[in-house]
Length: 373
Image 1 (spheres, helix red, strand yellow):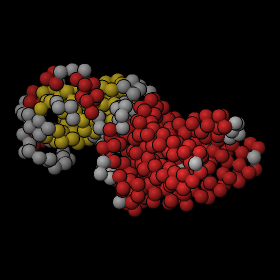
Image 2 (spheres, one colour):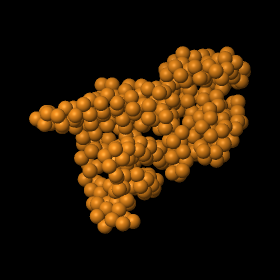
Image 3 (tube, helix red, strand yellow):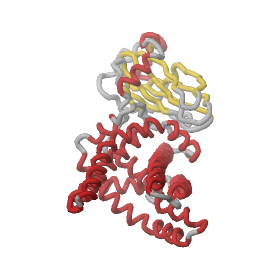
Image 4 (cartoon, rainbow, N blue to C red):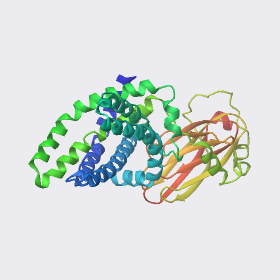
């Protein structure tokens, strides 16, 4: 699993290299301006704190860029940064709740070592171990927020980590060593620029600090995929869906097509031929959510053609009557069809805008000929 994750990391970095280089350049400038010429100890601690938040945001933007490439469309840095920045409160809450206990434990251990130097022989390895065990959950929590996890607690990250602690630690250790060798030339260039000083000094510091951001972002996404992680929408989404209307008030498939869908139980095979059903034309504000209920009488594979104008592709998710959410796959291009195996009963179809501008969206419901016959 470690080797395959590292290979997937390199593949994602190579596929999104233009966007990752843009993130690297922006990170070098931003972190350089923050960390260069630190003053006294108090000022330096503040700079490090601000720089840590900036680093977290840049990693999230790197993940967003890699996701855009995976979906087959270009996502410019401005849109990616805007989306991540709007999720900053959840990002800080989820990452903070994962890291606060290990950070506090490490700080107490280092304080004890400063008072009793011999304890440093124990506390330094302990601090390193805590760091290794923490970086994985932090990156997974960042991935969850980028995947539009709307919870304030890192349930998705912890659920993905469950039973895979040692695997994630191995990925972090192996990936950290490999990434260190990969960015060594870039870090050396940054150190040379810092030694030159002057107007190049801040760029050198920023380049060293930002050198691993693309690999951390792509590695976080590769680890998320390797663990088969899913966003835990939880009760919050179920309650939010209920606010949009009564499940019984949605589109009844039996009424829409004149018959009730009749598909054998289980997961049917993918469909390649569709018949048109109801269509919804809506306008969605940036970051807003639109949804509707549909009802089917038997488990069925349905298609959803999504077309939009302006900005990034929207996200599509489905919620059952029991409040169980399923995230649809990424949409490559406007007009592509998503297939979903839906259970019998009422299902809430939700479309979430990820663009920085208002979008005109068209959602068309499609059924296979065998269902409509």
